[in-house]
Length: 331
Ligand code: UDP
Image (tube, rainbow, N blue to C red):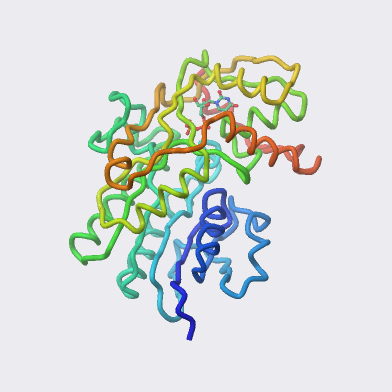
């Protein structure tokens, strides 16, 4: 009998899920990876397929989940995670954050496993408190284009706390702020792959609005370290994990121009509806409880990320997303 701890990771073929698979394989866990491949890609985890302590289930977690044998941990990371994805697949976004988490919690209860959910800074909406602390309840438009994601994640936190208090399930809630790194999908519409893709294709960089809105970008390895520490802590309340180093989107575009050496310029487009104006995590809790703070600055993180995007094939680089985003832009 193997003494390895067993962990189920949902959304395992996605950007964050695949990095979590790598981390737990490195720590000699038995990793059960689950994904329905709507937004995830097998390419992100195919290097793990030959390993005896890795298995993959092509399964939609909003349907009943069956895992034979014992299970120690569940990381529920399945979800579309970019504004363009929620617009394309709003119902699946709602289902994975409601039916999906319900199935995962039922599984955690049955197996006596500890469960962590991937929550998000989107629970704060377009925040009126800056930087955002875990105590802030948020400013969310439930029926706007981001509502399907924001409300699913808020429901996910609510049901997770209910299983924790009512059924004594061991739960952890990580509120993830903007994260970047290798394996982001080039065409998911998020700002970093958008800008780097445009630079690599020789297109102008599209800044939405006047570019004064801010974000705070965390390198994926830092995020993964924070997640591992939170998982092994005894803290069941939500914890922000992100890099507090805040930058405006127009300054970020300039950084990408410097990084890539592109001779293209910035062009301005209309700001999407409900686009948060400011976002910066307050990470006091993560520092105090987990002794965690980010180690990798943007210069180093962007360098590593750019190397990944440079390694893509021309076909991957030119793959377009044919979805019409314009109808959701304020005219
Ligand atoms: N953005 C932009 N140009 C793009 C894509 C995004 O200016 O081509 C902006 C977007 O309007 C937002 C910020 O970049 O203000 C971050 O967008 P992203 O979709 O990466 O994530 P969000 O933090 O908004 O969920």
